[in-house]
Amino acid sequence: MVDDRVPEDSRYTPNASPAALEAERITRRDEAERERVAETVSFAAQRRLKFDAVRHLMPRWSAKLGWGVVIVGLITLFGLIGPYLVQDPHDSDNPALLPPGPGHPLGTTKLGYDVLAQLAWGTRGSLFIGLVAGVVTLVLAILFGILAGYFGGVLDEFLTLGTNIMLVIPGLPLVMVIAAYFQNTPGLGPLARSSLLIALILGVTSWAGSAVVLRAQAKSLRTREYVAAAKVAGERPMRVIFVEILPNLVPLIAAQFIFGIIFAVLGEAGLSYLGLGPTGSITLGTMLNDAQTGQAVGTGAWWWFVPPGAIIALLGAGLSLINFAIDEVIDPKLRLAPKAARSQRQAERRAAKRASQNKAAKDGVPA
Image (cartoon, rainbow, N blue to C red; front, side, top):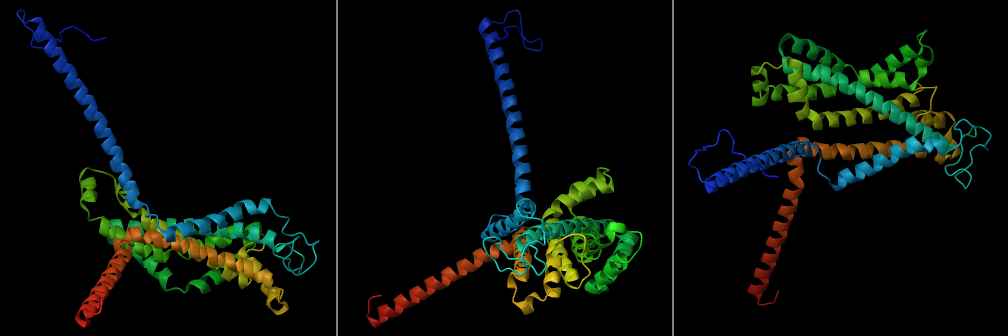
């Protein structure tokens, strides 16, 4: 229902005609409608800008990203659901060293354990170690890298010194020494030879390289205009880091997180193969260690060591493909390189075709 009353701030005069009053009401109604439309458009534009900003940080869909997501997704699904669909991995009532068959799709081990059951539980254990170690690596890299790069000064020198010390120490011997020490330390109880301890050791010893990369990027971002504007506005340093710096480092942080997972899975496999892995749980590395101690290669039991090795290789390949897609977000040159290469090949083919046509025309032979 339209309000026919004349607004108090209208230019109403006793001598105004009804037509003038009606025109005044229509004008004010149109102005209010335009304001509402402008507010709606402004809100939609803000949402579009936020969506574009988030999409800019996401890797573009490509064949390598698709294959990586499929491979990692299938392995993760196998590790999460597989243990509920197989028999007890420590059930030794099965015949020993059975080759793959109807009852045991991947055969059995020397002690009669079902290889498929052990593979399902081992995949879950390795994924757990990779995720925990990746998180620990990422947290330490952010603390030592971004804080050093943003604040600079004495804090930068102190944190960089710690990072350089971790860089010059050989990684594998350090992990072996720490793992052997903690596994023989009394008072740790079940934690002494657990997957959690191995994940923490791998995470604490593998953050230095990521910290160097994040420090360099943080030093570059702290000189940007929006960071300076936030400082002038009186924002606290930690708020500037979490609101202005970290969102622009999301692709790089994701890449370092994936690298940490790959390193942890491979590192656990190496430690377990040397006999320093977890003993209270099953991982892909402990499966390889059991196959080595059980002389699987000598007895020809390929089904004992090939499946865990294949899962490790496929998981590393899938994560690497995802990491390559993320690298294209970090470095636009990598995203434009395939297009430039295709354009160059097309230009070369066109030039060769024109040269062939010109030669045929000179010789009087139709092309």
